[in-house]
Length: 418
Image (tube, rainbow, N blue to C red):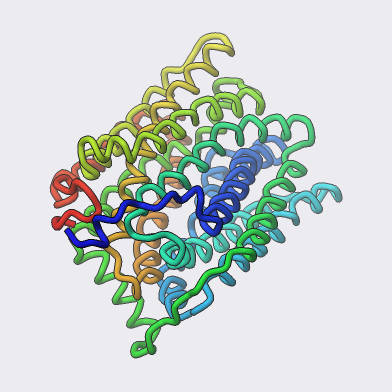
């Protein structure tokens, strides 16, 4: 072990730059939770959409990830990643504000909802591609797991309070007006990012075309044993969980008869598991190893979704059951995400972070629209409850990618196996 590796991770909560970045991400995450509830509720309540139409709405949010192949290569050639992050925030704020404006003039249409979903998705992809390089400029390697855990805790907190607040805002103000909160959160994130002093290293001299850089990103992801296994795992689990995600609000609203506020309370209560999972992930990883912790999370994440089909009884029982299922699932997703994301950051070369993220996201997130569309088709043909069972059980198959790879032997990000 080198002297650098032996140095303990710094106290990130005392680092003003990371703290500002952390606050900005937290603000934005809370706004996102409101829109994730409000967008499908606009479609369901104002436009009376079918299961297939609401699945298309979910699919369009993730479809721009297919552009990540080219966007990641382009981002690698840019020096000022912070400017790209700010631009992504401002684009999403402007697009979201178009919805309340249209609502005030009684002009909201399904076409506009589709465009908002597509453009906010594109902004999210740009942010994600630039975020990788910005993250490593702020955080030392020894603190990757700790920093990822802290950011994931904020995400989990947003899932706890965001849906409940979002449900209340939707009921009090209507869904289109509630979306203003998300737009404001992006403006806040952009403001905070602008206050972070950071030295961004210029990219190496460009020796390849954009298409060649895209190919390099794909080759890196598919040939590296850790990256390949992680991609296969997360893509599989994303495909199946998005079969459920595309239909969950529709199922809770129509089949279970829950109000927007009740749905928000159930999802928010269940998200407590995400907070616990994010906090526990570094400790569990140190105790049993990074790879084993990730594999436990991969199973715990989708499996409980199958039980969603069994929810019945009075309203309080439905809310409690939905919250319990979401709680266990949220623990699982954090055990998986915190450890795999830290591992991906550690094994990616510094000069290839954008194109690696682009290639990885194009497959990992690009498969989500397919899962959403399959969910809509299955929900229409065989019903919502059987579709949720297929989603939960199918998602557990993702663990076999890690079992058949070096990941299961990796104890820490500095493990030679990595």
